[in-house]
Length: 189
Image 1: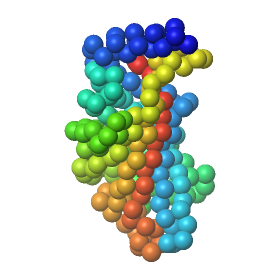
Image 2: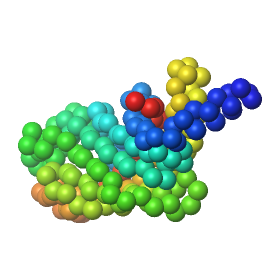
Image 3: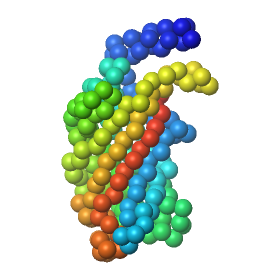
C-alpha cells in the first residue's frame, strides 16, 4: 500500500508541474438529463456519444478549464420514437445543430473539492452563460489499467426555453427546467 501511495504522490507531482489534459473514459462516464413530464413524472435520458476535456496544472484541479461536446443524434431515452422526435426540428434539430457544446470561463472553489464553474453552453445554436457545480471525487491508480484516474460529478439546471428546445410543448406537458448530471472517470491524454 505504501508503494501505491508513493507512486500516486510522484505522479501527482509530475502532473502538477505542467498543464495536463484529462479526458473522460467512455466506459466509465455518463452524461444524463431529467425533465418532468405532465407535472407528475420524471423522464430521464442520456447522450451516448460525448467528450469532456479538463485542462489543469494543479493536482486539486482548482485552475481547471473544461470543454465538452455531445452528439445530439446520440440522445437515448430508451424509447425510439421519442428519441427520433427529440432529434427533430421540434426539439434539438440534430441535423442543423449536431452538437451541444460547453466551454468554461471561470472556476471558483466553494469548498474542498467542490467548484462553481461559469461557462458558455450552446444548444440548438443558442449560447447562454450557465453555472455548473463540479465535484472532484479524487484521483487513484486504476488497478486494471494502471492509469491515473480522476473522478468528477457535474450538476446543473437549465431551462429548455432559453435554447428554443421543444417550443411546441407547453410547460404543463413538459417542464421548462432540465437537470443535467454527469459522472465520469478521467485519464490523462
